[in-house]
Image (tube, rainbow, N blue to C red):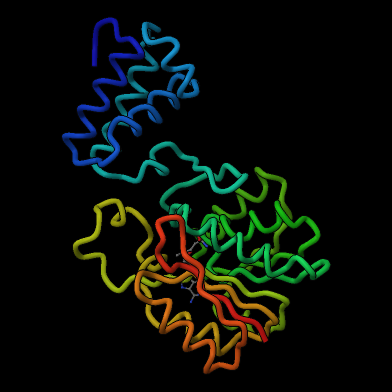
Length: 268
Ligand SMILES: C[S@@+](CC[C@H](N)C(=O)[O-])C[C@H]1O[C@@H](n2cnc3c(N)ncnc32)[C@H](O)[C@@H]1O
């Protein structure tokens, strides 16, 4: 990019370049990048299409576009991402919080309606999406979150501090589930291979994505009244059966907004 560049030029150029790179929602993502660089909302961006970019804006936009053209996830490129009511810092230390995981939090809040000051454990905290949202939306909850990744824990810690949310963060694995809780929640690694999946996944920590047998291990280990697990495509039925075998009742499957069976819960 050079010469006198306007907001409209940036939007159009970004759309073309991202589409050429195979990004699905190229126009929308170009809007995100332009809005981020110029500090404008989408509507403000379209209200000022002739706004000139200064050289710093052009360089910043170029740097972000190059990263996104390489198919780095938009959330890492922008450095922050919305999840429920929170804006979380996002980078390659942890998984990008997904919209479907917002339904996991929805189920946690519904199950805890009748429990005062619930003790909640989140296994595999990542950026802090689930644990921090539960604390944000149920301030009386005592939330503990564990992860085996020190990188993820450092990002979750930064997010907790930025948002002023008090959550206990520990470097620990699934064994924490055995300590006794009102509710255990987890979005564990549940993908078997990244082959054939979108290139963005290659930028995320492998051990946040690839995993096998976590749902069963958590269900068997947990000492808890309620258990809420996010599952991958096609896993809901087998995981629900696992919960029943492990002695949970009221086993329920909830779909995400794309109508995919995404959350399995039970109680005992
Ligand atoms: C799918 S990510 C979920 C991150 C976050 N909770 C979210 O929903 O965005 C799974 C997380 O589990 C962590 N993890 C992997 N193996 C683990 C283990 N054995 N015990 C605890 N956490 C683990 C990974 O480091 C990663 O942060």
